[in-house]
Length: 559
Image (cartoon, rainbow, N blue to C red):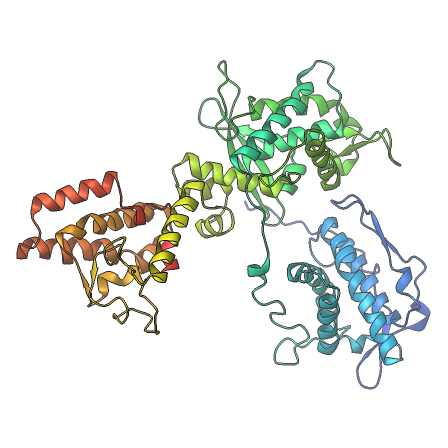
């Protein structure tokens, strides 16, 4: 028998907007409803330090109907009338979105010399709001984040008919893409270098030592250091780690292994990572060479220390792992849980007290995002560049893992720097091809005006991917080594990329080399079998420098 769906009861009298309509159909807020008796909304416990938000400063500022409608909409979110929206998300709507939107409305009302009404919330106002954000001098990615936290509130008002909502056309209330190519302007976190990782783990190991003492004090800072160790070893995200439950360790079918199961809010799904369980012979963890501990044992130790506090914890924190007793503030003595604010403060203290610096001598920047990318790059290194295994360890698709998490290694940088220097020198001296004898693939009859050349004055063809299809391309026995080096580079990458991309862009390359070049050359007597096999084995063990880079994506630089 299927599970019966249970619908929660909601008080529909809560957060209603008292309004009427004028002759033109516009919504009018009843004057007696403004301002409401209580102008403050309570978020409760969330990932922000603020537990409440007060709309009082925008009442009486010439935008009362808009302020009132947004105020009531936030209350509707909190009461669950607009779906499952978490308190942290609602707090972000107010602290990062509404605050700036209402400020913009106040400025607009002053500029017009009249009060704004709900009918004024249209495309013109949204465009003005986008201009207001740009005028604050913020980075594009910050403007986009603030706008993203504003739009859901206004969209909900439009769907309820309180503001005019146009969904398509040039007059659409919300522009389709107000921040084009914003992802190219954002600078994501980078993985820690080997030196940075070793220094960080050494400091972390020293700070975690007290946790194994019999009388270990359960402080927020000590729990933060334990959480950082778990993050470094597992590569999990911030919120799932902070909200780790006491039943997070589950049995694994393999001996001496357990699953760490975390809940991902955004995907409404669980995230699982296998951990080596404690055994008689502890070995060095590969992902963090400087931290001799077992992650599963560390998690169980934390749960043992915080277990007694779980009895006193508030209902919304019961079952959490990272519990401690507050030592200052209004809630001194009360049981609370780690949040992002405490995480940041303790991490900064760790960096300061241990004098951790990056490769440029500046204070080392540590956060969960950097640790996740460090984990990804370490897995990629340990698996000898296996993108599939790395993506599986992260819980991401191949495309997301490859584009957002992996960075070129030091060897790749050196190889590309060397190749770039050679190519620049050859271009400056008009001796392109002198170092690698025409092209890294073979001979070319016309490097300047070939079939796939850019055909611009002074521009040399570097479209090496299409050499096999070019009518100006030729292969001699001397070029077999370079050809097979390219051949094996392409085959190695087959297991590291999406199969559809492989079939579309690269599958034809080995086939052309085997059946069109090598087989035809042997048939005509151009190549000798011994020379072919010798070039094949040499390329397999010692590939040509041009084709010894680690990622096939680098080939697209020349396409």
